[in-house]
Image (cartoon, rainbow, N blue to C red; front, side, top):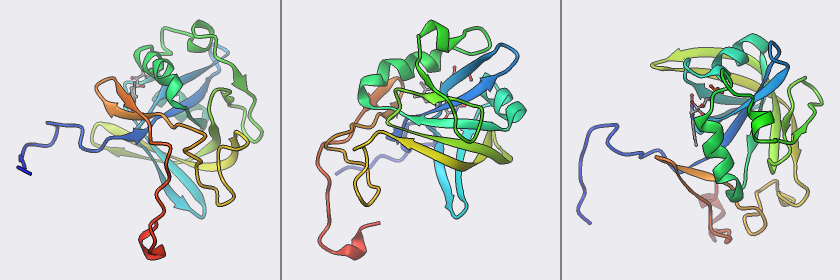
Amino acid sequence: MVRVSSDPGSCYFYYPRLVCVVGVRDDAKGTTNFAPVTWATPLSSDPPLFGICLSPATHTHQLVLKTGEFTINFLTEEHAGLASTLGKLSGRQADKVKELALELEAGETIATPSLAAAYVAAECLLVERHHLGDQTLVVGEVQRLHADAGAFDADGVLRVEATSPLLYLGSNRYATTTKTTIRPADPGAAR
Ligand SMILES: Cc1cc2nc3c(=O)[nH]c(=O)nc-3n(C[C@H](O)[C@H](O)[C@H](O)COP(=O)(O)O)c2cc1C
């Protein structure tokens, strides 16, 4: 295979990534705003910390710092169109919940709802923020999870044969996993 070297920024080498839709209350407008954020990652299991990278240009950035809480919502492949539309609109101008007729689930430990369409959603309290280049890394402590029954197996692993997670490839292109789980024979190889 011929390898090509290039400058960072010449391709989306860090994708595919799960599409994570961040929900945050907009109390001034009495609504909840949702925006896809794929630069999102678990950071610690004890305490359970989850980080999202937000551009200060997003309305979500402003709202998360204001309310101090947010939800993270993971969608399946049939919601590629929804993710794309949520990423094109800004809550500054649009009430995305109203315009897209989004069904919400009330929070249990926080006042921010999650998306009913998500196969799993988590309620997070803002614990830290760090400015990194042109982004803010916002760190939330996960308070509660809500998952579709049957989405995860007894080990807590996503059942890809039953649930097709939405992955982002960059440049308005999406994908999902195969329906086959690979279980390497050597347990040391699995992590
Ligand atoms: C699939 C996808 C992934 C995105 N990932 C991020 C991200 O990681 N961080 C970010 O700040 N914006 C990201 N965006 C862009 C925001 O979702 C977009 O700017 C959105 O309009 C912000 O909405 P808001 O102004 O209502 O917060 C992404 C967009 C799409 C479609």
